[in-house]
Image (tube, rainbow, N blue to C red; front, side, top):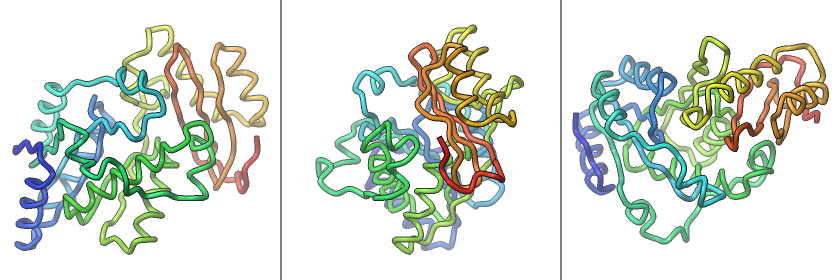
Length: 262
C-alpha cells in the first residue's frame, strides 16, 4: 500500500495507471473510518483494478472552527483498516494549503438543491464539498467513485456536478450501514456517550413510523433532540438533529414523498 501526501505525486501515479489501462476506484473520506467506509472500500476493491482511498479533513466544508477542531482523527487505525481491505493507495494531504494553492479563489457552487435540507443550516458547506470532490476526481483520474447513501443530499449534488461538467466518472451509491439499533454509522458517533448513542438510534426508528413529519419532530424534541429538520423530499424522508452537541443526519426511502413537507 502506497501512502501519498502531495497532490502532484498522486496525479503522476494516477496518470501512469490510466495510460496503462488500469481502472481506478476512488473512496473519498475525512478519516475516522468505520464499517460504513469499509463497505465502500470493499465494493471498490471488487469493481476496479486499483483502489485509492483519500483521507482529508476538508476545512472548507465546516461552518464552525470548533467543529473542525473536534472532528475525530484516527490515522493509525485508518491506515491499518485500509491495508487489511486491500487498498492500493492512500492519499493523505497534511496541509490544507496543498489542496488549496489558490487560497480558495475558485469554487464549485450549486444554486438550488444545495440550499435545502443541510444547506439551509450550513451555508457554504456543499460548496466546500463539491470543490474538494472535484479536485479529488481530477487528481485520481478515477473511473468510479463510491459514496454512502447516509449523506444522500451530498450524493445527489455530486451526481449533478458530474453530469453538469461531463466528468468521466461513475458515481456508485452504497447502502447506509447501521448499528444493530438502526443508528447510521458516522465518524461523529464516537463523540456520543453510551446514553447519547442509545437516544441517537431514535432518528432511524422515528423516520420509519407512519406519522407525519411534524409529529416526528415533536417526538424527537420530547426525547431531548434539537431538531434542524424532519422533511419529505424526492422520494425520501430526511432528518437532521443534535444530541449531546453532535449533529446527526439520516434518511430513508419514502415513496409518498414527492415534494418538501415540513
